[in-house]
Amino acid sequence: MKTQGNSTSRRTFLKTALASTIGVAMSGGAASASSQKYLQVWSCGGLAEAMIPANALFEKKAGVKIAYTGAFAAALGKSLLRTSAVTAVLGKSLVESGQTDVFAGRVLDLAKKLREAGKMEYFKPLCFTSYVIVTPRGNPAGIGALEDMTKPGVRVVLAPEASPPGGQAVQALLKKAGVQEAVMKNAVVQGSCVQRTMDDVISAKGDVSIVELRITRMREFAGKLDIVPIPEKFFPPPPLTFTVGVMKNARDRALADAYVEFVTSSEGQSFFEAQGFIPAISEQGRELIEKLGVKDV
Image 1 (tube, rainbow, N blue to C red):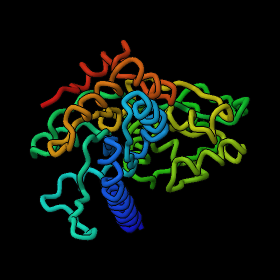
Image 2: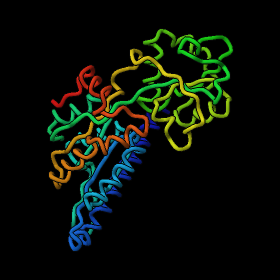
Image 3: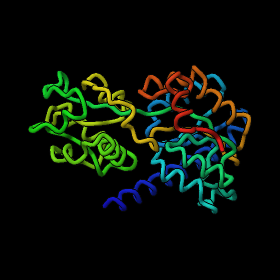
């Protein structure tokens, strides 16, 4: 079922990316008449809540139109790394999918692979994620630390089967803290979607869960949960890093550069901070850049 789910995500992504690309191409004639520029931006879905308002501001400031796709990071990466692009005939034109001007992805190794494969011109640190304990409002079970999740009678809600890195990251965190086995014994919900499990916590069907801080800032969950911090030393390194880079085949290199400069500026970074991310330009972000070695190859 897990493989089937990932395949569905990839198929959905490819359809979305192709439709988006064709949409830009079909607008191309009108764009040439009005001289409006277009920029294709892809990001992993976890960044969408920050990227959408950031994109809207950049469109307004730069007088451009952004064709944005947010999807499963692994599907995006595989599409970008393919040697032959999927194509679709549009009239007499050949429109390629599997390509974008700017890519913002999770996991540093993916950005490095794109650079090493000659697909990406360069990348920069964008932001970092963090993990927190969440409880129903009022924290009825009195959860104050990871160890409290192991106490008898505590109802734990998790999503171990969620698409990577969601479920895997939390399991790695629990293992690093030395409480994985005991916590999983208390799991009353073991779902496949991190966001769906939040409803069980909000409604107090469960006492506690672990999620990325960004999840608590989403509109449907904001203000409905109590948050308990988790020490950074327990965070699994791979999923913490988000980067943004310009692709080799960017149609307008100057425009793509300007976009990356914007989202890594204090103005652009404010959108990511508002959505629960650690901005790369913040003091904590700079420390993580050094600690995790987030350097262009």
